[in-house]
Length: 401
Image 1 (spheres, one colour):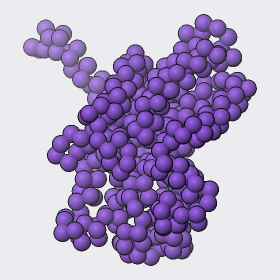
Image 2 (cartoon, helix red, strand yellow):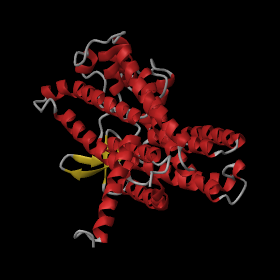
Image 3 (tube, one colour):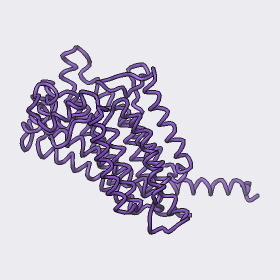
Image 4 (cartoon, one colour):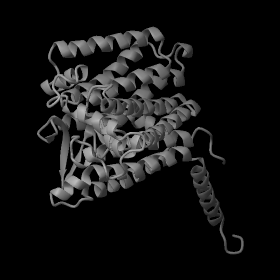
């Protein structure tokens, strides 16, 4: 006892100082370039969602800001969720990866049960009540990334065999099986877009894990054959076949299957260099483009912000992907590198597919634009993914004692 202060008090005070020191170091270490890009995208997203929805809501006698209010709430909750994930030690997630994956699969099975609801032709939702729905396939992307990272990092962390060879045939087969389960469940909804995301994640993570090129070439060939088989055996729904037909020949059915793509191109093309001005889009205000707050939100940017605004939007998404790649290359261990790489593959492919289908260079699949489109489940899943990136970044170097 010194001056009425016991040893326990001294230890407790030291521990508190260390905790605050740790928090300050973590705050400084955050990838602020990534945060800045995400915040900018969130602001731009809110403006685009309002522009895409306020006129139609007003015509219906509803709150013109109803969608954007819900979107802002989703963004706020998503940012909090991402912040919580960022503060966790991602290495602990490795032990719980099978549980995360299992819960995601349970959600996908629940969708196909009487709990599932069909919205916009896809049986992908579970209605929670009070106007809220959850789309389990969005969270299945997180589950797949962390489980594949656990699987593919194991040979190099434990080093049971030659680390230069990368994962072998057994690991590849297991990775395909783990991705195949959720893919089949999602395809049954049917949700072809998310199935394509799963494929991109698997291929990208296998490449990062060091799988030999001949294996990757074989997998790419198998994927092409599988796509032809799906088409040949009629596993796609009629509207999905019509979308691919319209992609191949946009003029074949301009008022039917080709309508969405045609109106999207008109909206983007009419924006010119600088656009018509925010909230001033004629195609947007006239509701010519279906689902313009979700799948086709890039048309709002193209028409109202023009080429310059669209390029800014793409540039911000590019910053997110660039920071993700930097985080993957600087990660402290293979598991962290693979988690970051999986997130980049997911967000990168989905960005390319969404903007590509808007411009007519990719078929319409119904994938939202990451960090921009309206949608609670997608927003939460995206923010969790960004939280994982920050978690890997924070622990790339040891914290000071």
